[in-house]
Image (cartoon, rainbow, N blue to C red; front, top):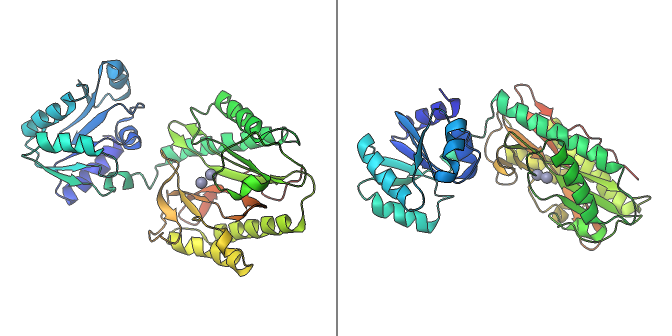
Length: 356
Ligand code: ZN
Ligand code: ZN
């Protein structure tokens, strides 16, 4: 049996749920292996259905051999669900309240008046938090391709090249070498732009005396990677040097601390306290890290809200940063798997201050 469906079936029993309707892209892939998002899954312990339309029937039959593939476009979906749930005698039905649009929900609740539609409260997605060794293998490949991308782009970083050119060259390399798509649009932020944690690459040219922050991720078998490095062009002033060394030390300290049994909030605190002790606490405005898998941002969170205990098989980013408005910013991000004894770092690019 498909291990994801197996896990779900156990959970459905526990919550006394008869069937689940899945509409979120990453969950569709997780449970069925279907790589397009134009589908709805109906999961029941006796039978799993993948509902799509003519364009994807052949693909779905190839990718999801254990699913019954149904051709029911648009508004026919709700009707199919009604007929099938009746046949299966299913009354309590999970739906993904974090994903289903209001319009679809309204249509479903009209058709499924004799059934109880129950919000899953992200329980379906929570099955993805602990990864199997196969899933970790895909993330490891994605991370190792990112490392190669960083090595490649380092040789192309020089004054007068624009942020946009760097981002495009890096994207071309990653895609050409096996990344199915990008985990997210590449961030290439230099100088003052570096103080915007999610800056979009612009036509700004790289200049001597500035930082360049590169944040990017690959996708292999649907699984994402995520890494950030900040490099300097030529000599930088002592303030920039200072924030680089503090960020690096905060990152190393949180990695020394991370492991099974620790809460996300506790790991976050290690980096936050260190950065705050130098007076830069207000300039580290985001969480220390996030889970990475089929989605580049998923549970668990390493932040002031991170109450979940870390367990072996979880994959999280560790990415402290310091952002000084109108001056520049630093972020250093690795991707780690929590293991029985600690962690494995999937990113191996150097972290010392590189001055090009
Ligand atoms: Zn990132
Ligand atoms: Zn990240």
